[in-house]
Image (cartoon, rainbow, N blue to C red; front, side, top):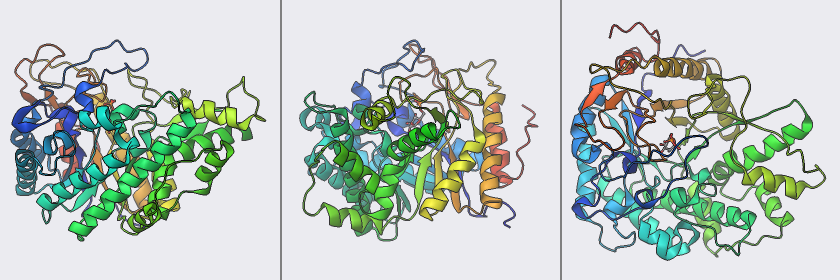
Length: 478
Ligand code: BG6
């Protein structure tokens, strides 16, 4: 039995640059879907949306932010290259040099600080022009533009960046499609047709990116990435087991299944056959997808919460298609009566993370990397301090749980990246929902001074990293 986390375990955190940078249209950046998105609030939450022009001003303060991460002892930082900073309209033949300079400088700064960069290539940042003109990843042309974008980034960062993530939370594309894939369902299409085509196209986008990365930099390590949200059956009935199995496959597993096997899984083919769905595929696709499956080095995923699924009472189980369609068109999770939740209703289930690690390792036998895990809290700065014991508690329990997966279950886990190092806008453009170890002093409408303050969890996480995950006690004198 292993004693603890491996010595080269990658402790750190992750940023979505489109949510943190600001630097709106500076240095040639173009608009992207996150800039232009009108967000639908999370259920029960009053809209508190911020504009993206300043966000946390990471664009201008990244050196200060990286210095704080170094102080915490980070071994790795995951960040995303904003596509519309490199290709303002999404498809320029010549990339914007200022955009590439910016990210290369960020990488240099990280390496100087002894922090391994982990780079995501698309993270809620489809150039707005590609959304409006081509309908994002629903279009084959956009997949080619993405390939060009990936090529330009990797050519510039070759030899400096070892870890790449092709596509952030690829499995959520059919459900939050404008943000995640820059696409919109056309009214003539059924939900099932849209789900099938977009799942296919995004899988192809991943493959094209993985192949491109390895072509340019064969030493780079590549992964796809999903938002993993295991669904438990609400009742101990076979009907609920089947419902949960269906949702788990379609929501959680489909992209990893394609990425690792290099083909469409039988359950997905059957799903389309049952509905007489034909999707657009091209001659070389099979080869591209197959090739990329040989190049995957690890599997990255985010996990914030687990959820619950049950059959829909008004639909009889004989009507399987209607039942599945209803289950899939409502990706929102039911509440699990066994776990508490944060203010946004995200349920806290630390051992669920161990469950995912065991499950994913058994299914794919590839090294795993947790690249997002954290809790959003509405916090106030008082006398320069934030006592975020709730966050410490969350991380304490999650890290203890993954340690059981590593030590007891033998899972090959490369690292744990918390969400997030600093506060920045949520995917719903809220600053009220804070995730950082570092408080960023701004409110929704008042930018204040944007100064950075170390929360209590900053010192706690520093101690965790210094002890390689052995010392999780919350005994910080703050
Ligand atoms: C993941 C995304 O979905 O979860 C992030 O990759 C996002 O970009 C994070 O910010 C937390 O979600 P939210 O909606 O609270 O910001």
